[in-house]
Image 1 (cartoon, rainbow, N blue to C red):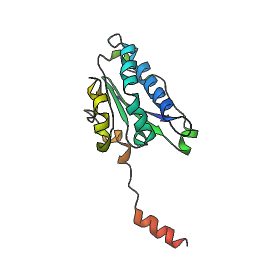
Image 2: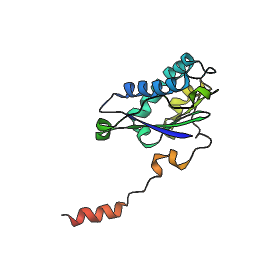
Image 3: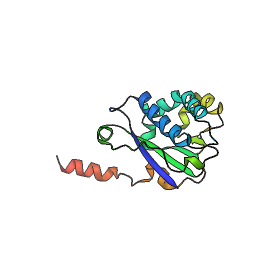
Image 4: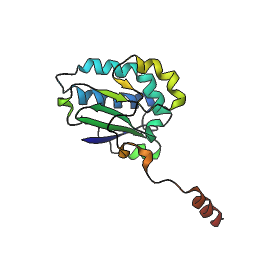
Length: 161
């Protein structure tokens, strides 16, 4: 079952603190499985911290989710920045299904222009990937919402002058 979680970022939290919350959510979800070593999960996420912090600070996770696949868990994690972060009602409870997981992968939405800088982090672990998750749906892409008609905005702006 596909689930989603939103985590408050700046100005409520610094990017590093936000990554800590994201990591804790993943570890807490997977540590219920007898097949997965929670300390190993935490170590991989610690190694990925520079990349995760960069994605959060750059607003990339506001736009497109980080995805945890750990069958049966399919978890989309996005961040919320700006005014929305101050009023967000977060749910950081472990996601149901983690106890049944036997393997896991975190799919990171790294933009093409940042991939060379992040390549060594992702290649160092079998649990990190740049690839879109298999079985991803359009609901996993936050950008799939309605587009803004900039022409209509411009007309409205000119009409109010």
